[in-house]
Structure formats: C-alpha cells, structure tokens
Length: 400
Ligand SMILES: Cc1ncc(COP(=O)(O)O)c(C=O)c1O
Image 1 (cartoon, rainbow, N blue to C red):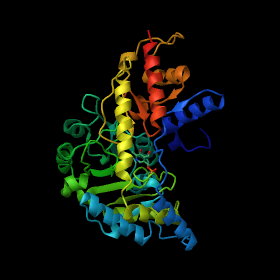
Image 2 (tube, rainbow, N blue to C red):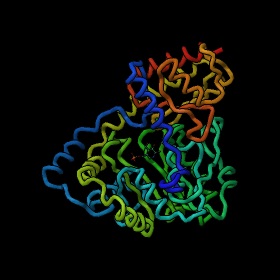
Image 3 (cartoon, rainbow, N blue to C red):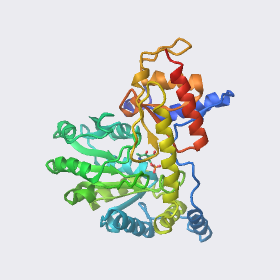
Image 4 (tube, rainbow, N blue to C red):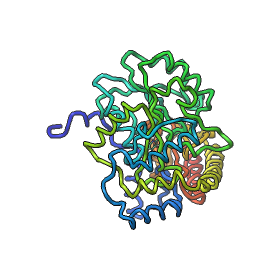
C-alpha cells in the first residue's frame, strides 16, 4: 500500500476494461479477435448534433459555463423529462455532468457517510459497487436470478433494507442483463420503498430509449409520484444519441441534493465541456427520428444473437427487453473440458478459454455479480456478431 490511499484497496479495476485490454493485446499479436465487450453504439453521432457543436465552436461558446450546466441545456432537460416521462422538474432541480457516470458519482460523494449502505440489485453495472466504496459507503447486493428475468423481487428488496440503507441504485433497462421492468413490476418495488422513507432512489435510466418489441419504458418517480421527493432520475445522451465520447449526463432531483452535487463538481471538474453541452441541447430538442431505425437494427441483432446462442451446447440465453446486451448462462458448460485439456470451473474460465480458442472477447457474469453467465454487447456489426456466435457454437461443441 504505502503511498496509495486505503480507500482504493476496496476498488476493483474494471473487468470490462480488462477484457478489452486482453483482446487488444491478442489483436496486436496478430490474432483475429472479435470484441463484444464494449458498451457503446457502433453508430455515428447524428449530423444535426455534430453541426450544433460546430456552430457552438464558431460562435465562441468555448468558455467556462455555469458549473452544473448552461440554462439552455437545463431547459431542454426539463422539456425532455416532461415530454417523455411526465416528470415536472424546474431548472434548479437539474444537474449536468461529464457523463452519467460523473452525475452518479457526484450524488454518492454528496450524500454518503461512512457506514451508509447502498443497495445494488445484481447483476449490476460494474461501476456501482466501486463508486459506493470510493464514496466511503458499503454496497449491498440485492440478488436476482435468471429465472426471475434478472429482476429483483419485492421480497428480496424488503429483506436487504436496514436502518443504514441510504440509497437503492436502480437500472432499467439493465447493463449487463438487458432486463427492463414494466411499470407494474416497478410498482411492486416502489410499494416496498414507500414504507421505508429513509431510503432514496437513484435511478439510472441511461438505456431508456433502447427498448424493443413495443416495451413501454417506465421510471420510478413517474410510477410512484410519492417517491418524487427522494428520487434522483439520472439519464444522459451517451447511448440513445451515440454520443459516448461527448461526455454529457444529467439528473433531476430535489434541489438540496442538486445543490450539493454542484458543490462537489465545482471543486473537482467544474462544468462539462461547453461544446458538448450545446450538442446535447440539439440532441434533446432536435429531431428524434434516428432513434427508431437504430432500434430496429439493434432488435435484429438481439434476435440473431439470442437465437444463435441458444443453439450452442450448454448455453441458455433469455430474450432481454432492452439495452444492447445479452446475458446468457453458460452453466451447461461448467465441468466440461476444452480440447486443450482445460476444465471450465467458472464463467471466468469460460470467457478466458473462449478468447484463447476462438478469439471472441466477452465479459464473465460474475464481474457483474451473477454467474455462471457472460455478457455480450451486440452494439457491433451484424456480420461480426454472426461470426462470433458461430465461433461460440464451435467452442461449445468442442467441449467434452
Ligand atoms: C448502466 C450505465 N450507467 C451509466 C453509464 C455511463 O454513461 P456515460 O457514458 O454517460 O457516463 C453506462 C455506460 O456504460 C452504463 O452502462
């Protein structure tokens, strides 16, 4: 340890980044590798959004801005929440940060005292527990299973709430499972939360627009207005508008919390990029017409991947409602051996051997708190997905 802070010893390096690094190394060594680890759309940012950013640069909108967002963007966000979620926020209830990630982190830093517990439904996005730990809190998993569609039950939620619970971090559609809660499934959970007024809700709605088969997205404060005053509704432009590199995320919530988050941001990074904020204004206020065609492409890829994986021996892959991930079980391969003589004892063995044998990079489910599963991101070309799934079928077929 020595020079490095003790708090960092509780933080794991990101498993998703580790997989990408390994895949890059193999590629550099001349191997033919298909990376299915990355969580970003392969589409380009729409032209109207790029143009708005270029205009902002030309107009000299290149200086410091208000710490937690320009008024024009806060207005656009209020408009978005009203239009799409029937949530009425005022600009002083809005915070803009450098990606949804910073917004989530600010909220935790602004609220967590040592010993506070934060509920994290599993499987979870890898960053939640580590962000909680960095903020000095204790992440507490709320378990879900593949049989329950990777969704937590009201009973599981009730059983994990203690007097120390400060937040639940809710994520629907989910990274890594793609599972999304219907309004009535969500209502069963908010009924539990209503009875525990000390528990606040941080809902990460980053994948709101990525839902398929007429699934209707819902968010907590919309489903249960009684929770509005203790809910932070987090969202962003990264996934829906193919803007991962622009780094704009935002949240709506009670003014005291929003102010505290601005204080954290004012003493760390200050405002998110001025140019990106103007691009986000256009993303939210401009045409939304590319979302639907993009979703049709994602849906086609999801169906292809689910179908091909279910034809691989030992794999069982449910159909997720949203996001661009599938989270199949590889339980049927555990205990079997590869032609090179390696026995698969865990999902981590499965992904390691798959990468070695067939050059397909996926992330093991246990990194997200549930195994033996693995996560595939289908935000990549249909041809690459087809080839990757063929290789997975071959890998599984060769196990003995
Ligand atoms: C569930 C979830 N929340 C938040 C983020 C972060 O989004 P941003 O790029 O806006 O920081 C991601 C990105 O992978 C995510 O999967």
